[in-house]
Amino acid sequence: MQKNLYIVVIFSVLIVCAILLIPITGLNAETSNPIKNGDFEMVGDPIPDWTEANGLWLIEESSENHYAKIILPQTIGGTNYLADELVQQNILASNPNLDFSYDIWIKNFITGSHVRIVLFFFEGSNYQFSIDERYTVATGIFEHKSYSILQKWNEQNPGIPIKNFDNIWIDLLISAASNVGELDVRFDNLSLSLPSETAADPVWIRTQEMTCKRVWINEEGKFQFSFIYPYRDNNWVKIYDMSGKEVFVIDIPYDNPNIIVDLPDGMYTVKTFHDQPEPLQTFIIGKP
Image 1 (tube, one colour):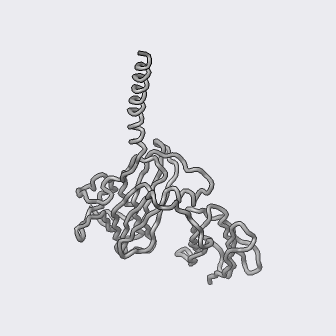
Image 2 (cartoon, rainbow, N blue to C red):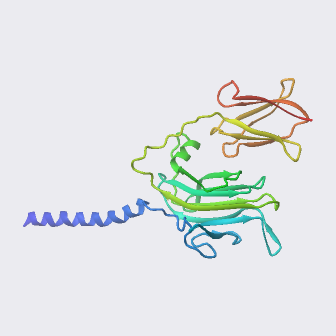
Image 3 (spheres, helix red, strand yellow):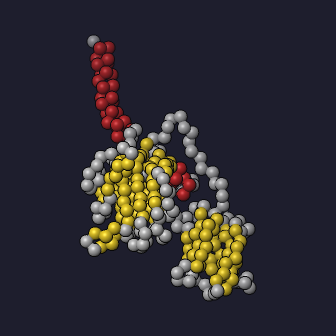
């Protein structure tokens, strides 16, 4: 009798544990794409499952495929819509080991404009961090883009554990710099998914030092610099006059490696540094 009682108790405990574990597993699985209508096959106005700014977005069909599209500038009721047009969606996700992917198509890029695909990570209503990809040149065709959330975090914050989050805002942001020309942008196949079990863990390896990609005199007569491959910190830019006197110094931020420097007419030497006394680059700039 006592033995049978033990069996009943053990069996009951197993049933309770199984019931308790089922919802926990379901909440954390995140095995399917949590983005709704990420392929934009559901049509409508406004776009189903997405929040639009100003209602300028549309779903277009081409070769039996649907995608989200916006053309700027647009004039509606006498108002020119030029800046920060967006479509966005909030999803529930807490697993940082996810891959984000999308297809993007940009035509006739207007100088000074930009296209951004931003993931904003929140815990409840508290902002934690973001991943911001920005485009300033046309693609001309649909290009497939993808990255690992964990890999992006580790690139920007080496050695620091990723912050907790439980929801993600996906923002597709478009900014047209002027009403001259036409900025045509299209998105398709947005997805968040677990990495393939057979794929090796991604390891990012730096292949190039921080580099000044371009320097020019802007409309205000100031030097403007654009850098690529910045480091997480210690992105030093130092400028010297022809006598060797330091006239400008800055540690440019990782997330915005662009600077504007107001200096008198003349010739200058620019040197960039990271964590060594020897410069990464040395070059001459000048203006009348």
